[in-house]
Length: 248
Image (cartoon, rainbow, N blue to C red):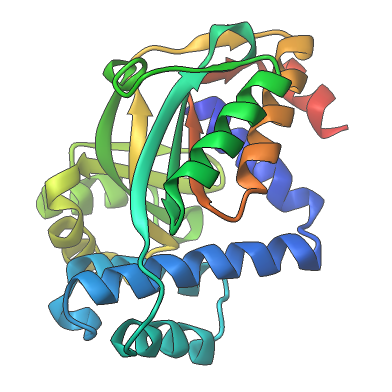
């Protein structure tokens, strides 16, 4: 996961074009609408919606966009989205999980399969790579919230499983079923987090050289550009030297 997190940070530092930001807002709004439709439209009564709203706020989605997404869930005749997970292998044998939300399963499956094939990968059956990951809750705080010991103490008290601290942030993980509870407890102790979401955490990783990393990043970028794709996770590791070359 370290490789994936580093790459996300590089993308962020490079700056996101307006079109990319608009696409991100659209995907976050879709998650809010689905979460509100599946449960209660009040975030305080709907853990999944609460987390979706938190994620949207962390990405600077305007309040009116968030509210419109919630309102859309209550409107008659709205779009019906289906959540689907695709699994496959990318360049270098890296395991890739693609989470999608679609109103047309055939369209999305065809596009995802084609994207894998055109970018040095191949789409597998459900379960073909998921065994190399664990479903976890992830809560991220900026480094400025406190030192490692302070955050570790708060995390243990909240029921978290692990804390990984870097110079930029504290990454706290917990059981997937405990995410809402742990996130709420941490919020009381440390304040608002940057993000709180469910992730696929690799239990095994694959090291990539520069060529493999460039090919994999291309695959991930094309997948993430698909309107139906909500999230892409891969179990790669990249050395700091290769990461610097990618960022150049």
